[in-house]
Length: 194
Image (cartoon, rainbow, N blue to C red; front, side, top):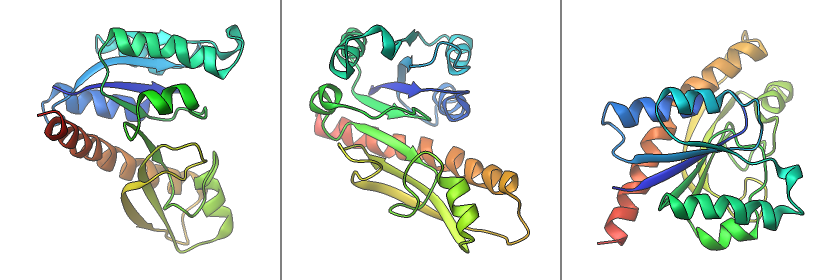
C-alpha cells in the first residue's frame, strides 16, 4: 500500500477529508504521518484524533531550509513514505525534498492555475471579479504553483456571492477533488513499483 505524508500549516480541513476517505476505504493508502510547520496548527489535533503520528518542525530552529528539510526527510524515511501531499502547507518546498521525491510531491491550489497563483488566490479571484475560478492539483517543482498539473476543476462564480460564500464553494470542490487525485496518483505509483 502506498504510504502518504500530509504536510499542513493550519486547521487541516482537507487533511480531515483525506483521513476520512482513508478510514472508509475509498482512498486505499496509508496515512503514515502528518508534518506541520506551526506549533498551534489544528491539523496536529486532527492527526492525533485519527491515530496518525504528527511531527512539528519549527523552521526557525534550523540553520536554513536545507537543514529543516533534512530533518523532515529523516522522519519520512522512518515511515517509508512514498508520496508527499501538501494540504494547506504554506511553505515553499526546497531542493532536499524535491530531489528525494521527484514527481512525488503534490499540492492542492484553490484556483484554476495558471490563474491566481500564490497564497491569496480565492481573494484575488474575488477581487478581480472574474466569472469563474477553480481548483488545481499539481506536482510541485521549484517554482510557485508552477509544477505539472494533474487535474483541475472549474467553478462558476455567482456575482451575488460574497468572499466567504466563494471560499466555501472552493473548499467544497477541494474536498471532493483532492482525495480522488491522491487515489489516482497512488495507483500510478503502485503500477510503477510492480
